[in-house]
Image 1 (cartoon, rainbow, N blue to C red):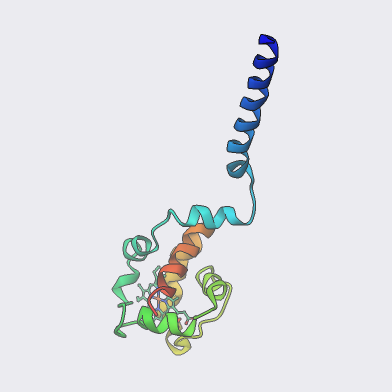
Image 2 (image 1 turned 60 degrees about the horizontal axis):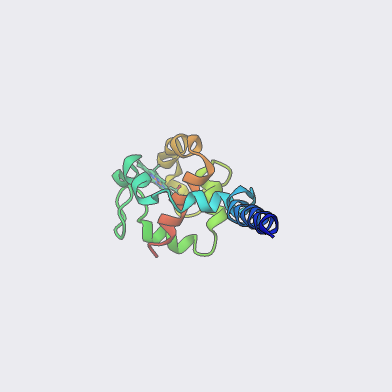
Length: 125
Ligand code: HEC
């Protein structure tokens, strides 16, 4: 009888352990999004000096974040591509020469950081 109890508790411990372990050990498409939630897009935007040319609501050297959010509404992936130098400018293409060198900064970032930046900008519409 005692042995049965011991066996059952061992099995239960293993089952419990596995069920706790499995969600985080799965590497899937959501992983980047999960990591991304921990990265502060606003902090990246400030630290990398994007604020020097982009105000939240007013056009300064570059378009405002609100303007960028309007043009890129529903196009988060396009915005991420732009930050990775994979897509042409659509907000103010005539001024792109000023923005172009800045892409050297965002291209060096990792995917999660670019996603965080895009989310931050799109939240300001
Ligand atoms: C020296 C000024 C300057 C700095 C610094 C700067 N930008 Fe820009 N940015 C511009 C100008 C000017 C435009 C308008 C040209 C254009 O649309 O690409 C622009 C446009 C953009 C756009 C719109 C892209 C499009 O499709 O037209 C995004 C997004 C953007 N900037 C993000 C950033 C981020 C992120 C940073 C910081 C890493 C940054 N900018 C730093 C001047 C700047």
